[in-house]
Length: 104
Image (cartoon, rainbow, N blue to C red; front, side, top):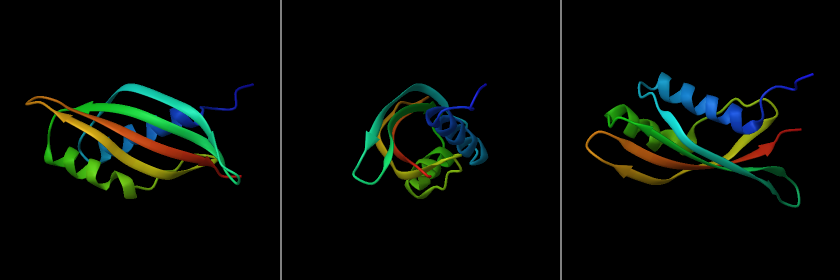
């Protein structure tokens, strides 16, 4: 019996949906995560690299990402940061670092 997608998959899907809704479809070109824990929380650190054509909509989406709300079953996004952004004339590649915690 399947328990559904893991938090990394849910987060990737949420990022893709948010970008599409903001008018700047992105492609995830790299994604990695590691388990994380503190004295009171369990979760994961995520590094996700997205690519998209340059646009004002993309710039606005990336700027708003740290304050964005995510709906992830059983998890909360505690932190989101655009760590790096590389631009060429035809592509923007952004590295997004996120921290999710279990919501139990």
